[in-house]
Length: 248
Image (tube, rainbow, N blue to C red; front, top):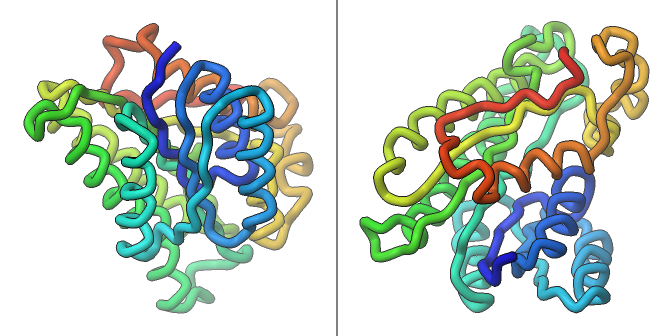
């Protein structure tokens, strides 16, 4: 158990929501960032507080640096930051690369890549022993798409997650001696609302037959892996990428 703070971006739904609820049961004070759905974010806070946990929700578009700074400032009021889960991410409608606009690609990278790096920057400033911190854990959300490329679907999303893989390795090496562990989860086909935002709400179930385990994963299964990486049970794990994809 811990009384440390965890920041979870994109924490109002799907994997973020499951991670927030799981972290609260382990004693974390939870600060969730949400892009637009205040009702969903409030329901997460209410669920945590109903079980005597502590949580706040902060509106935060991680594609905007000022929102990230406000998110971390709000979390500072909860206590000492012990973990960051870089979960916020977007996909675009199914598209070939030769049909993509510059605006789409720039937004994809701003949210999925630059936003994660800036959040990690703020976390390192607070966690690193170099800055007087007490250490901590950063868990980045990648995707099996980083390995598969997602042709004819969203190559830009896959490329953004490939960048997250590389960022995880590099940052992990950089801060390993400063009390911070950095790891990533590569989810496979997970039953969440992100597929609907890409215009294919049934995508995960439609492709389930291609998964060696012949089923989609759940948000709770990803959350369990994230919480393991955040725990002392993973104390010798850094610059590591864990596939949670049913073998895909």
